[in-house]
Image (cartoon, rainbow, N blue to C red; front, top):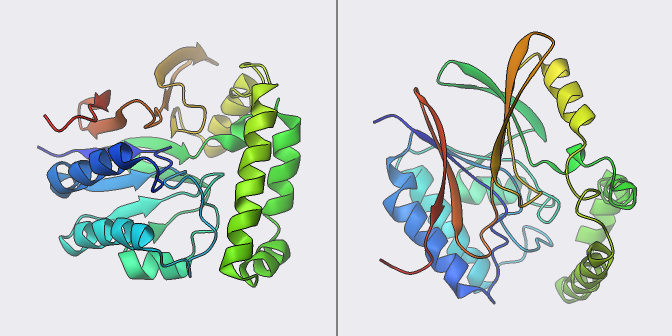
Length: 244
């Protein structure tokens, strides 16, 4: 049966073997039978450059290489944790890097896909930080630093982000509805899929005489989260970490 899979916010790291195990089962048992796989950002807890060839990162790259070599196309949109994934990673794994805002034809339904952080306009501090770290010259400077130094900088930034998020209200870190509508209108589509907020849900509403749908992917902290879409629609599902 034809189906396409969407995942986001796995935050893979060597410290969470349970997530990695679930991801690898998903890749070998499910994704291999799909028409396509879309990864909508934050695949990794942190990505400091394509030259970081740790055994863990090679293990994840091998999983993608195996999938693409079996003929399953994999598409990737950067998240706020892995926006430095580049052409080398894509070349070594066979995945296709997409623009941060991309429209696809999902079994006849025009669908707007993105990571989701650009929709959270109420979080002004984060948006200012995002604009800074997405400057190409700053990224080039960072990638020229030794790996050990990049790891220390990334660890310090993650700690600072975690502390800052504890002080923010849940409303601030959610999407801005007006921005959701603006992006849909700009793209001239009525369906959206994204991650980032870690609030899995299927939102439906009516505006301007049209029906809209926004599907939010879940994170992989407590269990896997997979959106399965086919010609008849989409189903937001979970995957148990236990190997049963």
